[in-house]
Length: 211
Ligand SMILES: *[C@@H]1O[C@H](CO)[C@@H](O)[C@H](O)[C@H]1NC(C)=O
Ligand SMILES: *[C@@H]1O[C@H](CO)[C@@H](O)[C@H](O)[C@H]1NC(C)=O
Image (spheres, rainbow, N blue to C red):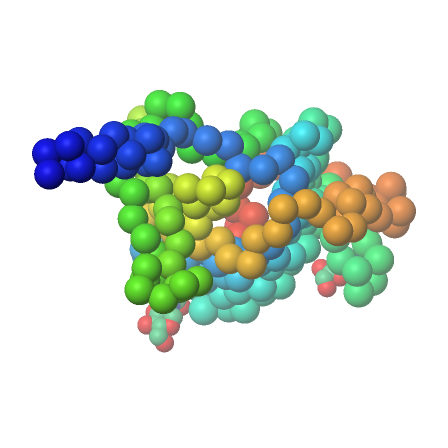
């Protein structure tokens, strides 16, 4: 009996290695929602993510302070530019992008909160094994919590503290590894003569309009 217990212990030790911080696949597409603690902002978005070229495209619709909005933005971090794309009248607005590219990842400094099953393990296909992590944002901005799948490091959700919104929650879903139409990560032709704004933008301002 003791032998068996020892064997089981060894086996479980081999099967379940300790979760490690990880990076999500460099090319992904999918969707997410953003909600904030102060209820000012609620948005759903489809995204394309290219960590190799440091490019992100976001098609979003939501409400900010009870007003609905839609937005189509392309973020080119290498170029330091953000494009607001208006397909309806084939115009663009170009804005300097100051922020550094943030890859989808669990930072190496994060601490493991735990490994759990979302859904249920009682039925085949009913559960998803995930790891939750927490850590401090840079420059003492606050805390973050992030959950990714054990297999593949696919983002599930991220929560982080912000000055303007309180806790901000991003929930990812329908993620696909890869990008079906890479052209969507280049500015459309009609953006070449875009008006350029002077005021730079940060990431959260993507989800609402500052007047
Ligand atoms: C949004 O609507 C709610 C409920 O109608 C109201 O209480 C709140 O003050 C509104 N917020 C803003 C910013 O207008
Ligand atoms: C194009 O459409 C957008 C949004 O509908 C609007 O904000 C912008 O002013 C329009 N641009 C021109 C040049 O008409």
